[in-house]
Every structure is written in structure tokens, then in C-alpha cells.
Length: 251
Image (cartoon, rainbow, N blue to C red; front, side, top):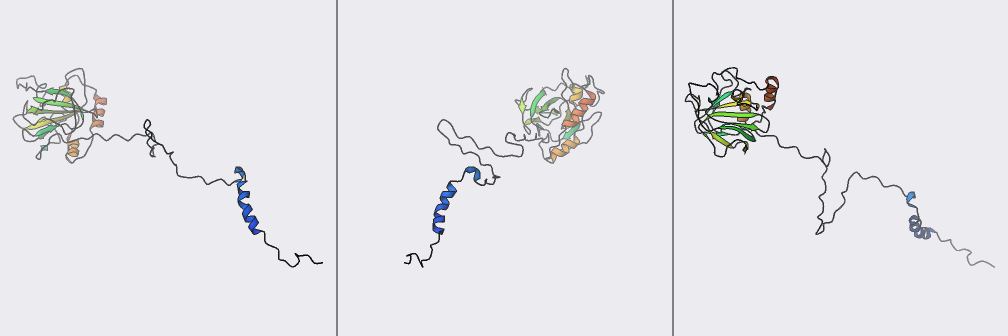
């Protein structure tokens, strides 16, 4: 007697395997799964703000690291006389300084940010003497934030509020070009660069110890050349001399 299955074609088992595949995969242990490729992009955790707790700012990446602070802006310097027509000599008689020639009344401004050191609002110059201390007439000196003392004399006026200890900014008007002191009736600003020496009236240092012309050249072209290194070097070599080397032609 023949079987009913005789002559029937066997059915393939593929559908059964397809149905079992998800179950087999779901039963794999985590350690049997292939590890995911590491990501090269850092995803910051998202923060949710509440009424009491605002969401913290997401730190931004920087070459110096997340705690690095931005570099401060460089100290700005400007030409000390704000006028369209000015002239000055690269040298000066007897000691390093510069006479900046401009019309009387032209604005004299702070070269850089700093604090006012000394102000002379009275012209005490007398040709009979003493030579030196009062030759500048009306004058003002500024200790810049770079450590340099910037001195200007022979002014015709000093601006209101410009007093010792007052903070000023680069370009702020300090006074006006004049011909007080021993300016010999010629309108100009005597300009000097020096370190701040304390403990005595150091007019022989304040009048100038470093030649200013190359710095004036830079500032006049809107450059920012600094005299700080030259002034520091001079002070390291000379200290604070207690007396002038000469009393002639001082301003």
C-alpha cells in the first residue's frame, strides 16, 4: 500500500528560519555583539532650564583649553598733539627729549591710558634762576599703564579735572600747546620719556632720558611702538640719579 506522501515535493524551511532569526539575535549576550566604532565628535549633554535653575552654557572648544581667557587688548598709543600741522626734531640739545612745534592752543592729549602724576598750573619760570625746576612752565606728566612717564611742558592751559591721581585714556585732552616757561616765545610742546622716580623732585629725569623721535614717528602713522623696553633698560643701567648732569637748555 503506498504512502500519501509518496510523490509529494518537500517544502523548503526558509520561512521558518526567517521567523526564528529575530529571536535568535535578541537572545545574544551583550558581550557577543560587535563593538560600535568610537565617535570623533563630542556631544555635550543637553541641559534643561527651569524657573530656578537656568541651563548652563555649553562650553566652546578652544586650542588653549576650556579654562583659557582671551588675551587683553594691547595698550593703545597716540601722537601727543592733535593738530594737522606739526613738526619736531629727532634730537634735542643737552639731553634726550623732543620739541613738537604746533600752533598755540592746539590740543595736547594723553599718549596712552594711565594716571596723572604731576601737574604744574602756574608758570614760575624766572630767567634769573634757578635753572631747571621751573623751565617747563605749565606742564603735566602721565604714568602710562606701560610704566613709562610721558611728560609735556610749555602748555598755555591745562584741562579742568586733570589732577594728580586722575585716570585718563589715550587721546583724552590734557591741555593746550603754549609757550610758557623757557619756551622763548615759540609755541611748542616739550615732550619727554622717562621712568617714574620717587622720593624727590626729579625734574632732570622727568624732562626725558630716552630719545622720543622714533616713537613719535610710529604714533603719527597710527602705529603703536612702545618705549617701555627702552625706558626700563635705561632705569636698570642708571637708576634714579639724584642730580642733573647739566642745567642748561632744560624744559
